[in-house]
Length: 148
Image 1: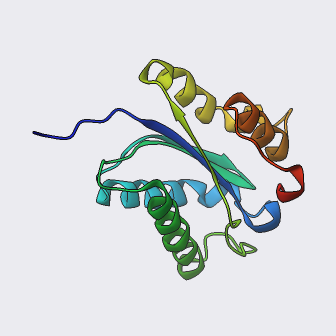
Image 2: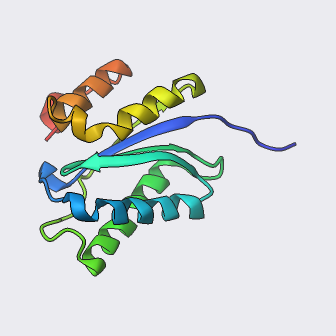
Image 3: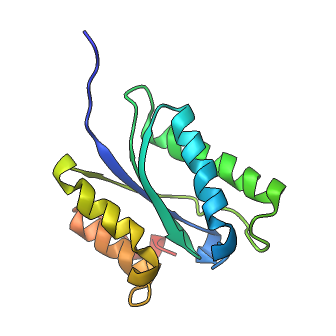
């Protein structure tokens, strides 16, 4: 018997101290690198995008891949890639934690559109406000003192 899953994740994490270090000029190179990491783990990337202080990754996880190990691998490998290739001059690393939210396949197109329009979205809402909205929308209990 084969294993079949249909779980779409939106993974969200920010730069260390939410510093606006991910300049637009090299973001696409970072996104392509993360896409390659996901492909190597047999995960399907639906969309990746972000602004100066955080990223959103919409992906399906292969059944053999755990969420925690995937995020850890993405953060470690991409931080090293950024440093070696000097993509973002003032980048000091990623925040310690992350958010991960699951979605129904029926929500896929709406979610992809949301992530695609990050720059427009963040003209009116900060990353912190957006993150709190995501936590509340998904019924995740949290303590604001742990949100940088």
